[in-house]
Length: 148
Image (tube, rainbow, N blue to C red; front, side, top):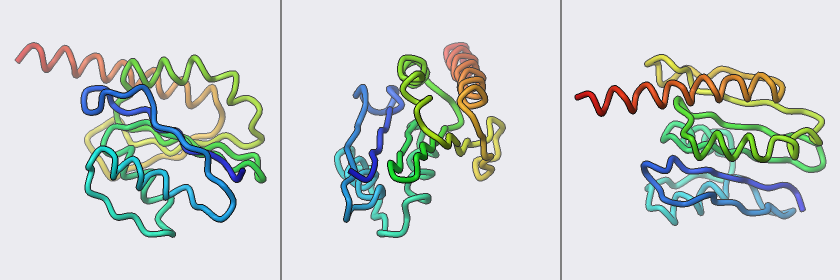
């Protein structure tokens, strides 16, 4: 097995706990992102070499995901602007599984209004801390929406 892709949807948009699939040799990670798009009718047509672009596009929509590359020992997370409770709970529940990877990184959409800015993060503690900040942003935006 080459690796896997796991997507934890924004539960405000898609009522599902997770979408995950192993990626076998001869396949690309982008195929799983395409299956997610097709299943939930998101309208994407990702190309074979769009793996990074696909991961970021799904995160831009609000869905948290990660992909692994077994041979290289790499796990990469893609963090949307806000992290929902379901997404944070998933990460916290599985964080000990993530310690086994040699290289841990993330691409994170900026919490401010610049939707194009993506920052690179390294290390599980930094990623968890960032996710908690984004979860607080999620809660403050929920309160603001209710106040309108």
